[in-house]
Amino acid sequence: MTKARTLADNFAADINGITAGTGITGGGTSGTVTVTNSMATAIDAKGDLVVGTGADTFSRLAVASTAGYLLTVDSAEATGLKWAAPAGGGGFTLLETLTIPSSSTTITSASISSSYKHLCFVFSNIFTTSANNLDCTLRFNSDSGSNYLYTGVNGQDGSPSGTNSNGAATSIPSGSFSGDSNYNLNGVLFVYRYTDTTRRTWTYQQMGGISGGATSRFNILTGGYKGSSAISTFTMARVQTDATFQGTIYIYGVS
Image (cartoon, rainbow, N blue to C red; front, side, top):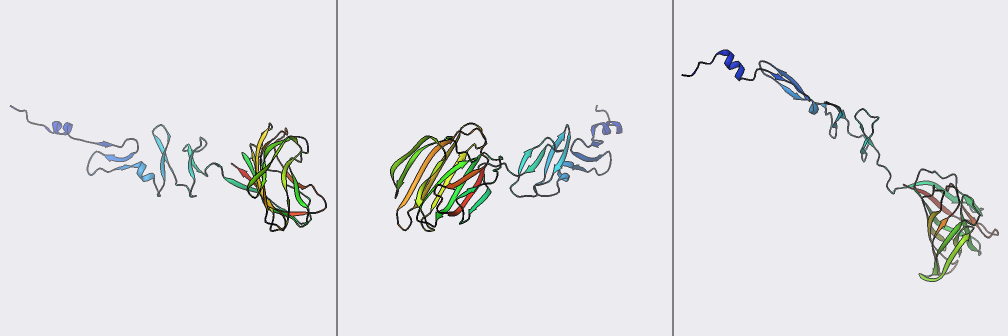
């Protein structure tokens, strides 16, 4: 024979109360019981994140206000995270534009920021208005000591015709080109790890033309700089002082 169930038996067998745990609010012991996911209600906008802030605690991290920002660990933040601009990974930042006035024989950069890994110098339409060759010296830190070494090839109309080599030069050779605004010097100089104080590697490529003619010449070099100071300035100077030169040099910091 089965024992009759009492009210106490029924109460013990049924759910008689709901208690909200971590991340949940609401609950109760009678009537209609509502529970709410607190993590869900912490979100206010598309892209918001719910981030742990400690043992059994959390907080909302609002979506970044700038497109392209990345989620970054930062222990100083309440959530331990923040949105931040992506770190540089090879991007070029224009540091200075050197516009060479027509009265110049020498042009020197301002102090170059030390906040980058490498430097890139872009030579754009460098020319002289005279019939003399455009023969320039390229130097770091105004250093005229025997601290430049290089090797490479030069040629004409796409064909190598000679070599350049020097283990104790006083500057980087720019090549020699007659000039006007139609037959000018264009090139790129890369300096790697320019803030080092030991030997720095550089590469240089340029091409230009002979004034009034269709011949093009080129110079491709690789070398090193042995000066004991980090590179902080750059100078381009004409070897010939009887004529001036014009053009533009762009200096980029490379992350």
